[in-house]
Length: 498
Ligand code: NAP
Image 1: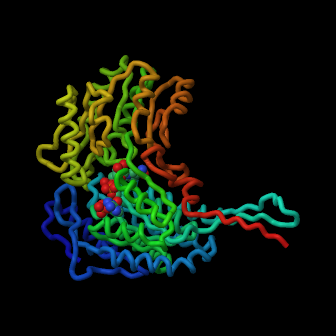
Image 2: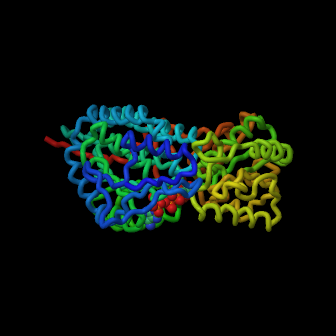
Image 3: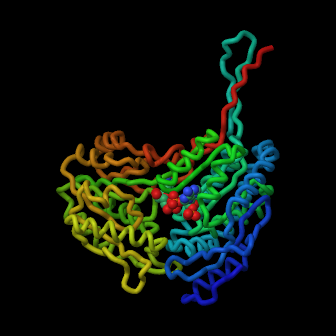
């Protein structure tokens, strides 16, 4: 393990020291219950996106380790799937308790590698842990059925069986919660799992895995492979006939690729993909409430959230007033290093920074006006300033592209029908939001929006009890709620004649 010694911020060094002292800073893959360090010395650096300082070097593994992980998961499956549900639940509960005990250290690791403000990291750890707790409970509620039999004296029985070995691929924007949201239901269902976290943020996944091992989850049940060559690792997962299910969270383009690869062995697949969430403010909305909602919906994790709004539709009668008041709030956000009590951290990398800048520049060239932001912070080049733009039209590039940055693009509209038409005119269908005080409109617009999730006068959609997921090109399947565990189960029907 190589830890950089030249941090320009003592807080960063202290957070790393704490993670090392707790033995939560892991730098290898986790296969069959063992930490596997570098093969042939190949490593890659994990960076603090706020400063580009090297936090540590981790093993650069590939297809060989992915194969070994799949083998380990297959070998562990026979024992894990017959482990009584109550025992699986107890192990998940023990994992949950350890995550709770180490939440501060886990949050610091998350902020170090992802950049989000520490308060948001703490919220992500709690959010992920709520899924571990929920699925510990759900493990005990996997029920079958006895059907009315059409054959005399026969019994028609439906039992639920784990799908088998699962492969999960997770993104950098919620590196802890996305792992928990997949591993917990898979294990509760009796599946074993192999995981590939994003190479931008492997440390959170590894720290969570260490705690799962300490909780007593048996060797081979959870395996994590880290490496730069995502297509090689992903190719082993999707190509293996031993892997029966792939659960992916990431971009729609990679999701489509993985779905095509899964077709070769007809795997079950869950896809949590990109979004282009509309946020509609009607004339009759409580504007203060709408602004509070939009601040979270747009600037959490610097806008790098699949459910972040991408298109803010504001009815003409309140457009100017809303824009001005919102820009004042946005401008006041404290930008800084995630460990320094800021409200807005950096973007994940330079590619994201240029993508966001290009979208803003293109909107300005097409006639949009920048009320605040529109560039990076003067003394923090990796931080894009909270930005508010008016004069946006539904035809501009910025409204059709997932911005993944702290840019609010405000589109004016005249009527409810027009707002719904604009909102639905996207290939995505993940989250949507609207604000109104008219109760008839609440039901009407909720029904008309073609999205997997709708927030009415709220943006707080994500929780373990509800089915999270999208329609259209935003994905297939749901995570959370009763539906979440179904993704990891198959129904077996037996007709038992005498
Ligand atoms: P991404 O580029 O699609 O990467 C996601 C994961 O896929 C990473 O682990 C990545 O590895 C891996 N990957 C990339 N190419 C691959 C390939 N050819 N084969 C196998 N794996 C491959 O997405 P991202 O930029 O990390 O995440 C942002 C996207 O995720 C956004 O579109 C966002 O909306 C979406 N997202 C959706 C949800 C949801 O629940 N719907 C939640 C969070 C994020 P490397 O990073 O190592 O290259």
